[in-house]
Length: 147
Image 1 (tube, one colour):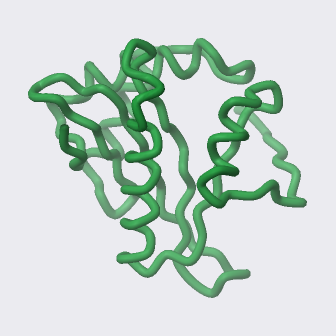
Image 2: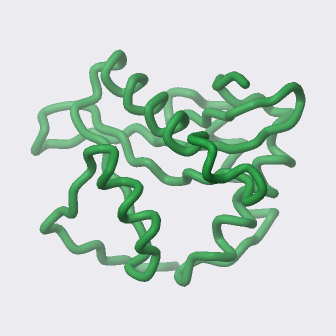
């Protein structure tokens, strides 16, 4: 098993993983065309963000994506962790932890001063997972305006 940056050829498998993730979230719905377009933006433009994959040969077992932002509060670059998912048949083997640790190492090495993420309020497993890795609940409340 290795963790590395995703390539353009990984996008179909990444869309499969995002379908799994979005099927379990209340606010989002799987849409392969939208997921493919967004993944193209990230994979082909690393200055906007990165997608890392956990690979076993040609099979992508899990993924995590982050996007770069500038925080005026932190005085520089920060990351938004957008997607972390492992294939259901491969869960409970430490793969999600390995992906998250890879991202936190990437952030530290890259000089990012914060990683922010959103978790579903009903997904207590995800909340416990992130807390085990040092994340904490922010006092900030997310709001959205959709177009």
